[in-house]
Length: 353
Ligand code: PMV
Image (cartoon, rainbow, N blue to C red; front, side, top):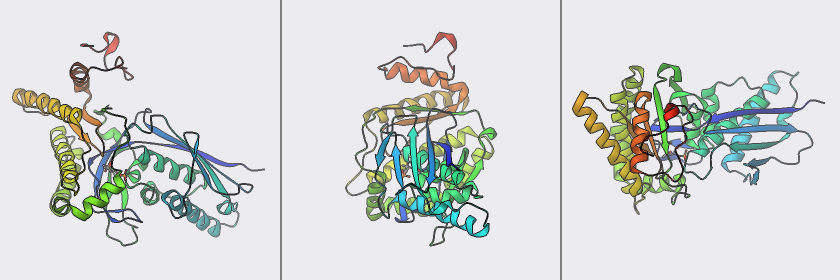
């Protein structure tokens, strides 16, 4: 008897040009294009196993061992239905293919990081779900084609189908067929960029991205300005900076875009505050660190960015990371000693601790 089962994993991505706002809430079509870096270490990944079997009575899903309801017409159900549709097309084309598209699936997904830590677990989660079903169904689909389906689970998930530097092109087709992720540059193009994630709070966020976006689209005049006059230029400029491995331009645009995203949240009625005092203190530290560096050799050394929560992500060339971690540890004493998974600090560990 054949066993139809496959496992795939996908990493978290962190946007430099933020996606914020939907023009179609069902298909998850954005009001602007966005661009992110997919984190390539093994620390922040979702791994998903899917199994199809004639004996299963319904589709079921477990997240970190706990069963989640698959709501009819909801995002999970949509992604599963779309993947079954692609499988059906394969079966219709090739009669020798087993007819597994009619079987129910059981899906088990695990994050190797705390789901509630305010990191983009829905991005890696839906990307891994779609990838594991694509492997189960042996689909000939490209990552961009799969990104169209992952997008309908969680918008930012479409960017986790690629590694490296990834753009989500907003597209213009009403059916969403051109709203997909494309690779801007593979990770190997610029391996020197590293990301430091500072978990400021692991509380669940107050306003979900779905509710927040809707309110911003309905009430913020600044969002309309951003969509029409800011993001298109920034997408082009940051893509050029990535191609040229120009950290200065990359950092400037990344910080400006994080600032504008949080300004747009503040411009929402009632306003949304995602950052807290510690988030703002980390911004002040990075600004000061860059100011000193610009004064001495004209170059930015680090870029902060914040998603819909208080946690900081700091992008920097690897050579600066040790200094940055030392600064963070010095000004923000840690409850536990800093773990050094990449051996950045050698045997000496982190100074100032
Ligand atoms: O995909 P969602 O609904 O989790 O929205 C993500 C929104 C941001 O993380 C704030 C920005 C982004 O582009 O990832």
